[in-house]
Image 1 (cartoon, rainbow, N blue to C red):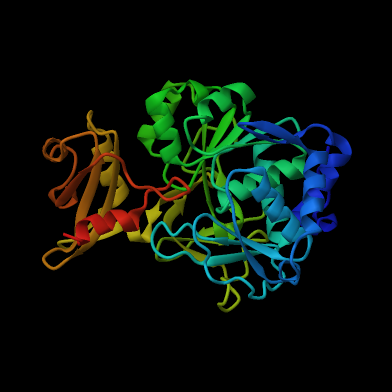
Image 2 (cartoon, rainbow, N blue to C red):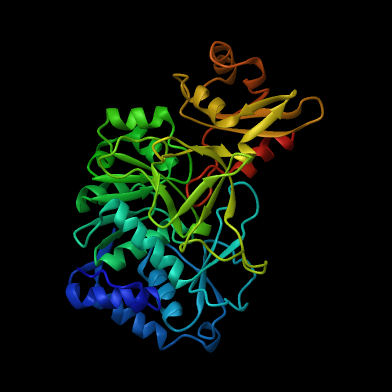
Length: 419
C-alpha cells in the first residue's frame, strides 16, 4: 500500500513520489487522448519546477488557469512543491495573486452558486485529514480508478486527485462533454465524483455508462428522492455526500453498501452538529482556519446549510438558508417546489429561485426546460400549497450552469429581476 503517515507529507507531490516507488510505470492519470504514469508525472513536475518564476516559490498565492489536462495538474503540483500556493481558476483570475498564503498549500474559491466566491486557504494538514477520512469511509485502495469529470478549480475535482495520489490509484480526468461516456466505457471506473446535474443529464441520455461505475459520489447539491429512485431503477449506484470547500471536501457520505439515509454519517474526525437556528456546524482537522484576508476562525464553522441529525447519526441536509423564501408571510422551501415541478412528465430540467417582490416580500420563480409553464402550474395545484406555486415562470432551452455543473442561481434570478 502507498498510504503513509501525514507527518511525512509536505505537499501533494509527496503522495505522487511515494506512489511512484510502487507504481512508477503504472498509470497515474488517464485522459481521453492518452495516459501518464507516476514516473512520467514526476518527471513533468520536475521540469516545470525548473522554469517557475521566483514569485511562484515564495509562499504567496499564485493564480493558475486550469483545465482538465496534464499541464494544469503539473502546474499545481510544481507550484506547491516549490513553496507557492496555487489558486486555480477557469476563466478569470480573482485578483489576489501575490498575497501571503500563511502556510497554505492550496487556495480554492468557493463555488459562488449563491453569490460572489470567497478564497479558502487549505493547509497540508487539512488536505491529509480529508484524504484519510474519505479513504476510511469509502474503502478506496490502489486498485481504484476514480473518474474526475469535475473541474479542477473547485475542491470536488482537486480532492479526488489527492485521494488518488495518496492511494497510488488511477485518476480518469475528463471534461463533462460528449467524449465522457466513451471514456467511461473504456476505463471502467470503480468510483466517480459528480454533481446531480451531471447524473441527471446522463440518465436522460443513456444510463449505461453510469451503471458501469462501481459507485458515484454525488454532492454539490441535493440528491432528491426522484433522482435516487431513477438512478436505482437504472442500476446506477449513488452515494449521497455532503461537503464544502472550507472542509477540504467531504464532511458526510453514505458508505458503500449502506442504505442511503440523508447524506450518511459524518466522516471520522469531523464534529458535525446543528445549532439553535437549524444551521449545520462543522469542525475538525480538515476544516480551514479562515477565509483569505479575514480573521482566523476560532469556533466551529457555521454553514449556510439547514439540517438535522437523526437518531442513528445520519446527517439530513434540508437545503441552504437562502433556499427558504418568505412569500406573503409563508415559508417556502424552494427544493420542495423544484422537486414537485420535476415530477411533471414534460419537465426535462428546472431550477427554482426567489427574488425580492414589493407585494409578496419574495416571489417564487421557476425556470423550466421542456414543458409549458402554464400546464405545469395547473398540475402543481394538486401537490403544493398556493403560496408554494411559482408566481413567475420562464421557459429555457437549457438551465444555465456554473463551471462545476451547479445551476447558476444568480444568473437565473437575473432573468426575473431584469423584467
